Each structure stands twice: as structure tokens, then as C-alpha cells.
Amino acid sequence: MIPYKDDNPTRHFPILTIALITANIIVFIFQILSPSGSQKIAYTYGAIPLSLLTFDTAQPLHPLLTIFTSMFMHGGLLHLGSNMLYLWIFGNNIEDKLGYVKFIIFYLLCGGIAAFAHAFANPASTIPMIGASGAVSGILGAYILLFPHARVHTLVFFIFFVQVVRLPAIIVIGFWIGIQFINGMISHGTAAHGGIAWFAHIGGFVSGILMIKTFVRNRRRN
Image 1 (tube, rainbow, N blue to C red):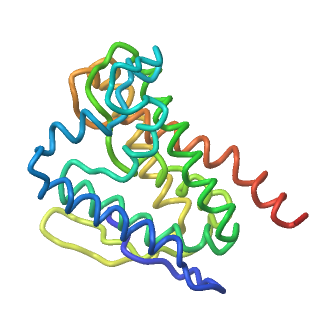
Image 2 (image 1 turned 135 degrees about the vertical axis):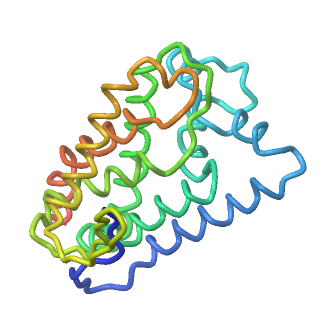
């Protein structure tokens, strides 16, 4: 099941959503072209669970700063493409709902909570976590709460056939988070050796659900 657009119009041009996508693409190009090599860059700017929890300042960059630098790095084209696709589909509506300032704070805060969720699930790991997945997961959590019935155009695969269907967001995003929970339980404890940071996705998603109403309420008061 792969979503590619929604039928949820916005009132304003999604400047920040596009800016975030652009920034992620630029950083990825820098990663692959850097003479230092992608691995060294990942260990310098990625969020390392053990360092985050112990505030190990032996890293070139302070662990708390790596929470934010890691959000703009990716491990490959598929990793980058999937994150940016979900950000493009669902991010514009959350930006439209919150406004520019609230949106960027919400995005970064969800990404930060996601990083710590991954760290607490794998406290001894020295493998750097990179990617916008945690922050984007927060966007998905906000979207499923604010727009559960918005229609999402989705590619559904039936063995050798592909069908385009319009499904409610609660089904598309619900299916996605269900996969994250299942894989998170199956792989618990193994992420210390690399792989997908499932608990970062879960942490970001849950934080998005829990925080979005507060952000929306504060915007209305302002």
C-alpha cells in the first residue's frame, strides 16, 4: 500500500514543507558527494543512542545537536524518497493548519522525541540514527487525528496487479503505524546492530497525536 496524494485542499502555499524537502535533498547530495564518506558523516552528525543518553561530549558534535542534524540525513534514495513522499502528501495540511512557526516547532519537536524513543529502546547502541522518519511520523500522527476521513489516493498491490484506490486517511495511516508496531516488537533489541529505527517511528507518531491538539488550540487563541 503506497499513498501518492490526498484530496485534502489547503488554503496557503506549503512553503515550509517544500523547504524541508529541499533541505533534505540538498543534504543527501552533500552526503553522497562528500570526500569524507557517508559513514563518517553519519557518525559525526547522526544521533547515537548511547551518546544521547549519557551526554557523551566526545563526539565532534554535541549529542543534543545531532538530534536535529540527523533529521536531514538519509541512508539511501529509497529512504529519502519514502520520507519526502509522506512529508509532501501529509505535511502541507498540517502546515496549513498550524501556520509556519508552529509547524516547524511541531516538526522538530516530534523528531526530537522520536530520537529519544529510539535511544531508550536501544540504550547501548552506538549505531547512528539518521533520517526524517521520526519527524514525518509526527506529521502522520497529527494528520490521522485532524483529518481521519480525508481521502488518500493509494496504490494497492494484489500479487501481479496494481489498483489505485481512494482510502480514508485513518486506514492508510493506520495500516502504516500497524506495521511499525509489529516490526518494532519483532525487532526489539536488534536495532543496536543497525536496521530500521521502528521505535523512532512509533515515538514520533504518538508524540504527533498527543501534541497536535495543543498546537492547534494555541494557534486559535493567538
